[in-house]
Amino acid sequence: MSNASLLTSLLQYKAWANQELFDPLTQHSELHAALRILNHIYVVERIFVANLQGIKHSYSATNTAETPTLAALQQAVQETDGWYLDYVAGLSAEQLAERLSFTFVDGDTGCMSRE
Image 1 (cartoon, rainbow, N blue to C red):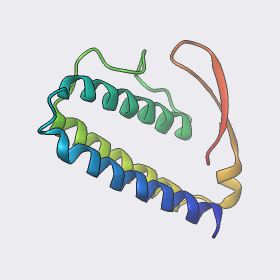
Image 2 (image 1 turned 45 degrees about the horizontal axis):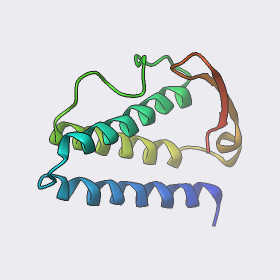
Image 3 (image 1 turned 45 degrees about the vertical axis):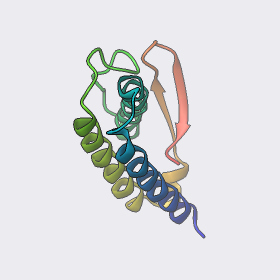
């Protein structure tokens, strides 16, 4: 299995797991706390979308001041899952291995491969 195929498989599994996670939350007694955690994960994923594209993002922290509704967050996460799957499908092995420099929201620098 190629790296791109493995990455696509992992992202498909992640998208499925996100769906399985969001579905029962409508009945969760600690919904607000769960939404804050899920929103943090979403924000970090959006930051890395910007990093992968080499563009600036608008986030100054790894969460937002306002907590989104479950429906809005689920929609946004599904769109991001789709973006990652489409993005990976268009990358070569060389592009997957390419190292990218970026800046964390706290100002520290980092480096990662696209993979």
